[in-house]
Image (cartoon, each protein chain N blue to C red):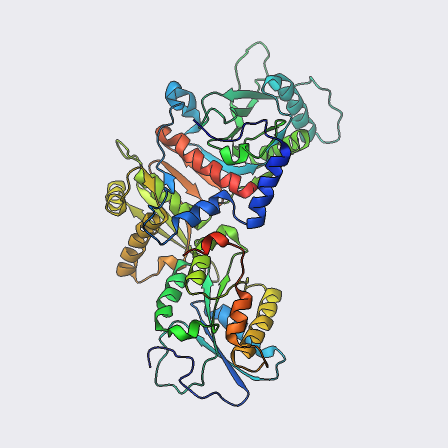
Length: 180
Length: 346
């Protein structure tokens, strides 16, 4: 199966699975560890991938949330994410995809302009989160946030769905970018 | 010619326009970037930047006057506007700064204004170092060593040079009131201790603030593209890039040198609109270099950090060091640096 679809498998009992896609292995691993440390009523599963498509010979549970991690210091990570996005079905983008940009704190190391990722997130109508994954406290906060988002996307929070969350997260900060 | 607000617009108007900008969260630079990135192609994308040309003001000035600014390594700082600075008080400033430096160097001893030690400070204006008529005049500060023998009135050798300038600084000039002089770009050459002492004196006297101006990889690739685009009669240096690979225990450096005419040929094949440089062209230019390198060495340069760019026009390092080699494009290079300095101040 070369394209990820949100509803092609049955959900596991009380299980929520997140897929983190990005070239920065160390940062993804640390974020995964931080998420698994969180107190959560659902059973969390974290999958890491360098890029999509995922190998099809592995038996994996249904993926509830995909987070694409872009490192602002490296154009390579942006290209990688852009290419991986082609392997995700369009129905995933109804609240089950999110972008995470890391490295914005060290402005002198940035080789991608912030607006590039903002534009990418706007094109795919998905929320964009900024977090310096290298800093421990920010990482823990982001892990908490992602766990919350994951629970909603897996349907474990009553009366809130992924699509509700998406419309709540749409910010009206940059109205000039709205007309795409 | 310009349709900017007259300088006598009320401070309240300036404040409210700044508040609006802050509220929307976009500086003019970001706004310009956004407009370039519009994907609808019915509206022609507005020019991102002009390729540096000779400014009409510079043609009146003898290029020999600025020859001492070339071929020197300058460290860059951004400077907030100076309060109550006057171009007529240069003698007074020289005396005060001289005394201050002497006092700093002999900490603890009492120093009278008027005592000379073996250094001398000179303030002078650099006429013609501006982009438009609205830009304030650039000025130069030099520390010279005085010869010990008073009978020979020889000028000593220059120990330290620093100059302040503002090239096309309109976005900052609009927002600042009459008492302030805007010279956002400061370049220094010489010992770091002298830079620190002079910086302290300026900060205390004119209530301004210096910050080192770092140039990130994004801006370095812009510089590489703009300077490769400049037409040159003859090339005196190869075009060279330096990348730093983040790995432990110590970082590796990758250096990539191209014959300048090949670089210009590559740029010409990428470049479409005459006289302007857009974000897409810069990205394409750098991607060509990256993919060529990847094909030969299987290394993704896009995952590393661009640290230094060196062309026949100028060379820049990410720590904020610049060396300008060509007087023809001096104003163009400074205009871009002024823009970065203003962006850092805002």
